[in-house]
Length: 168
Image (cartoon, rainbow, N blue to C red; front, side, top):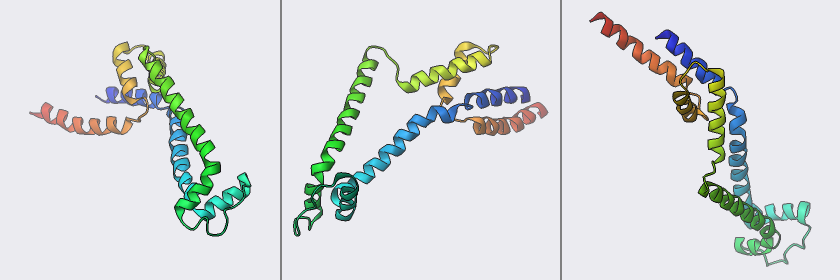
């Protein structure tokens, strides 16, 4: 039992060795999207934020007194220069999504599947003594996860059961 646990932990450790590198594009995209999404709201609808952004990056004429009294009026003013980048980014994302969908329609793999396959190839190369299909499935299941805690918890759960069964 202990040798099995040791081997599983070794597989798990090897599997997560480059995990941060594999997750980096996803994490960057997630955080960038969250920051950009939340930042767009005050950049469009909050007068002081839009004014500072305008002063630093746009240099458009500020609205006349009384033309930006409500958040909708601020949005109407700031949208003149916020619409091109927001629209372009939205169109770019739409095109990327469309390209991915078309790639998937003709049998291509998603980036996550490519990374899972690379992980499986790496483990198969490092542990040639294990069955390829089982190792492949294991690598795909944990490609973005660290399951060493699960392995240790399972071992702790099974060891007392095995000792109890041997004693009866």
